[in-house]
Image 1 (cartoon, rainbow, N blue to C red):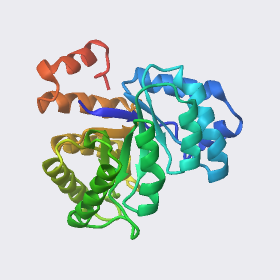
Image 2 (spheres, rainbow, N blue to C red):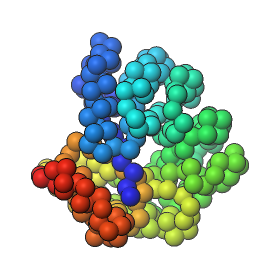
Image 3 (spheres, rainbow, N blue to C red):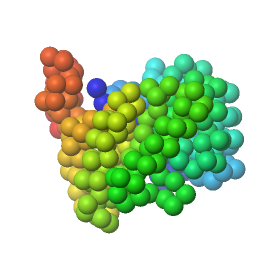
Image 4 (tube, rainbow, N blue to C red):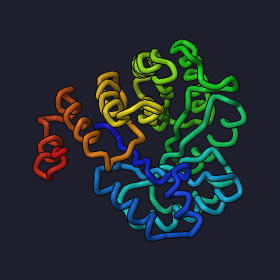
Length: 267
């Protein structure tokens, strides 16, 4: 089953940034609850307006949200100081930290936290030179990510690799590159999970939701394990239920049938 990481609490979005500035706790509680009710398995929490405010905002968000939902959180930050503060107030057993790169400074800053707190962690297929344009170059960085988690004795099962989605509006080959890299990761490292920020694929193009829901079906066929998405997008979620049923991921189509009975397929 695709692991759904609800993306809506992200400080790069204007309503989220403004709610953070006015410390609107109820706003964030409602956002988290809506995402859980829509099918999110994790709630992503991103407070990264700037490094200084993130140190205050991330633990504040974690404290107010964690007791209001039954699902665990995903801490969306590469700021180790903000993460340390948020980890100290986090009560749930399960957690994803998003993310580190193949850069040695990021490895040394974030993997000890993942190890200490027994957290899963997202590794991005990028290094000092940014995101490679080819799948072969990204796989070289994936090898470095695996070497890093082994160095810190973090089980491969707790690593989510993000092959990184580049908008097809800027390079029309990048959807195919992502899918091929995804398959290579699953073939080479079967214990490792894969994840992506799905909606990046459609950035800058019209009718983004059409592209997003088509892309998620392709990604599922290539072995994607988790996606950072908006679970309130009913058409996107319906496409996921349908793809899982058709690919045999959803045994006896039980999840699809439950979604139908609950009216989740009515788009």
